[in-house]
Picture 1 (cartoon, rainbow over the protein chains, first blue to last red):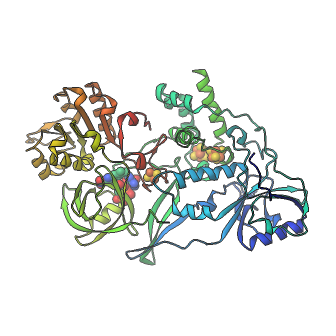
Picture 2: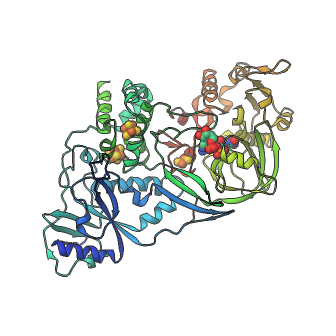
Picture 3: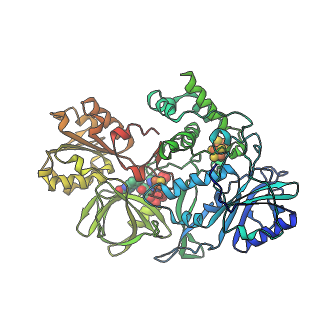
Length: 350
Length: 263
Ligand SMILES: Cc1cc2nc3c(=O)[nH]c(=O)nc-3n(C[C@H](O)[C@H](O)[C@H](O)COP(=O)(O)OP(=O)(O)OC[C@H]3O[C@@H](n4cnc5c(N)ncnc54)[C@H](O)[C@@H]3O)c2cc1C
Ligand code: SF4
Ligand code: SF4
Ligand code: FES
């Protein structure tokens, strides 16, 4: 781990003190955290866990993974790029307040992946993302162990992080807090009792996942026709191209920009960008009816390669951060973690 | 922070139909792109789409557009004096420095001719910078032939071979796919050649294969890829092939790179 700033404070807060901390933080920051939305889950008797603005500690869901990732705070499902009034394009005003986001270690790594695309890929940073990115601070929600059977952050090397402004552990109704960021420290209540707390990280995945070596994989693709391997045909039969794996993923960053005209005022409208998914039809459709990756197995292959090969070749680290949301969200019970290990097995067998 | 999505208005100077469905729009524009780059063109409330440059001149750009959907229908409804909105230029164009001093083979299929037309015009305007050029053009039918006047002028300066996939009786020219033009080419000395191949995916695949079979090395071949694009800025992911983004790493690729772009 890096040196921690000398001014780092570690405290134990009672429930009331924890809410004072949040109140104090809320004076300057909008606070975002995973919250439980009763009955809004995938099946009618399940809760949904999603990111939302919070004001008290008990609203924060500490125990479970959020179904949708925190990426939507930086990269909303739908975002207006311009208001279009006759021939004028007007950039919308974004909420100017700073934000503090409570999130897991894998998701903190996930933000670094989004940075690679939105800030570092192509000729210049993306201003809509960059503006929000400059306004968020990260609060680590400690995972001492994997949250459930879908996690594989240890295999992806994203189980640990020190890229946080503060860290919290929920401990029997109390909150253990480490504050590293100068701006956040004054928000601690004066009564806070010192405590010996630095976050712990998971050290084993519930199911071992073997990540293939990217250079061996490249050679399999280039020299041994790996894209034609029968394993992809298998996914063609199972995947229904619903795109849930993409929309739930922390690191999927694709979008499509399009224009709308308001029906009641056709000379006005918006240019928006909305999340796009490489599993869904039309992602690659071209004029003249040509499309690439027509069947679902090759889409699974395309996504998988992006996550554990292509991105690595471009940016030197894997895109996938092992958050497990794709596996938890697939209606066909397709496991991406299993797919990664299966690729490793194919490379071994060669 | 500047906003790279912010387009600039460009006035339509002239509109020239090429075929029943393709029309060249001349736009007032001061900063010239390199041949092979593209722009994102938009009409507010209809949308945005990428278009190549089919001509570059003093204070103007040409785009040759096929009417296929919302944006292109909107553009086709405009008159000279109306505006479209441009952002760009984007991507890497044709490597004129690496082509300099070489004998060029230009093979273009259909609307693929649009982005290479400025290369042809540049080479013909500066014959001293190149060591000759052969132009191979394939179209679906005689009615689909683009840039008829320009081609007639090129024929005065360089060999131009044209073939069409099919033609009504009475067409005096060749019928057949573009690869059938290759065996007749004199490619000696081989190392003096550089080839540019642009067209539909299958046309490019077979033309490149035929050129390598004739002995050209991968690094002597340049292709330009089209993908469905949205941002043009390396962000939206639509144009990604393996670890490359066609909008920023391409659209023009040397075949040493392009041969690994497997989709
Ligand atoms: C680098 C590049 C250069 C191009 N140059 C030219 C050119 O010089 N002349 C020309 O006529 N066309 C060119 N195109 C294709 C042009 O961008 C598409 O035809 C575009 O879809 C037209 O927009 P539209 O709104 O009229 O069609 P839409 O209503 O969007 O759709 C019509 C059809 O085009 C498909 N499509 C939608 N968006 C795109 C997209 N961004 N790229 C490709 N297909 C798409 C749709 O799936 C549909 O099948 C180029 C494309 C690229 C990527
Ligand atoms: S691919 Fe799956 S495990 Fe990897 S980051 Fe995306 S949702 Fe998480
Ligand atoms: S969630 Fe499952 S079925 Fe849906 S697109 Fe992803 S892999 Fe296919
Ligand atoms: S067009 Fe958006 S990444 Fe290339």
